[in-house]
Image 1 (cartoon, helix red, strand yellow):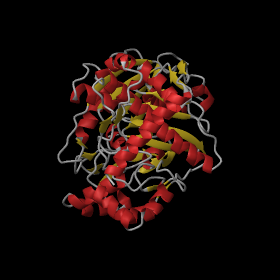
Image 2 (tube, rainbow, N blue to C red):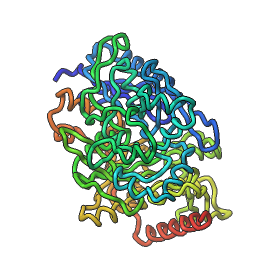
Image 3 (tube, one colour):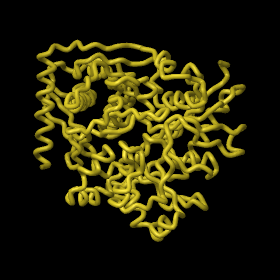
Length: 500
């Protein structure tokens, strides 16, 4: 294989648009990134400008490619913020409304009404998801209901719906391809993850015309070719996955029971459940990990709303630190016997609670508590939330006779903090493996594109490329760990009771 053949990976996230040029060995040759403007037009509402998403992404792709001349871009992979919803006119390509971001809560009342009518069980059974404003279907319904003329245009086939991957594919191909992949489709509440089809029952429930929907493809597939003039050459789009599934693929979590957890703004933990579509009894999400060559691999997922965002709050909200990296030294300096607990329910609690109403709290403060103890509690809160997810996953998997995860592979910006990763191992009581390459989201879709384009023959070729940077083993005495878990459980119970 020629060393100058590269994959251009697009990593379009909630807070930034990134482009990464990756070699076939997985080395990042060039990275370009631009912060994405956030819009908050009302309480609980979060929007992006779809044109910003497209133009920023295109600009970063061109910038990243310009930095590495004399290479041949053989394909493009796309990973994206999931659930974020865009509707646009098929003729003009213009959005009919700003993108409604996955964090947006404007459809909470609509979803609650459907719950009261008894529809959540059917939604969960067919889609693997909960009936929640987090997912795309309610957002589509809101646009059709609230944008003048949108429903009539949708029913006439004049509008297209897409998550961010579909929007980028449409623009990259000059409007020739309206498609998504199975991982993004599985996050809409409209896709039946057992049958692998858009679900007519869900379309009726959310009152959404089927004419809006994109074609669903596998993760390594033909998503079209870039339009003339965008780049120096026309490039095939060959790999697509939602950001968390892309990260799991980049972490080579191909065997049943393998688990990864990404620590970015939030934390998203996925465990491979193989051919088993696990129906969670603990408010976890059953989702598609990937589909290749006609075979679907499933995953259980737990979503934590606040991880790195807690550290950003310490920096920007409290001005406790100038840089997030300072929290490592602070945590190490904290009084080891401190009893400070931080419950990061700034936007409610995610899995396994799924309660939007609780609010954040700091408990156990004494006169001796200061910056170090609060930083310690903030980092440990992420570890404790991860342990809650692991307990839920173990319960759900044991109910179906599946083996629980014995190791956890981690990525995301927070895992550069050695104190945090060691604490994560101590609290979860399992080894934590940190890879050499933590750009796993971009890496995952590059690998998918490489499979489609014949750069890799099989998954074992990708597994061989995964490299361990460091493994962290549990060191905390069992009695101390149990004391911390008990204190956390009591604090969570108090928060939930106060909001009941």
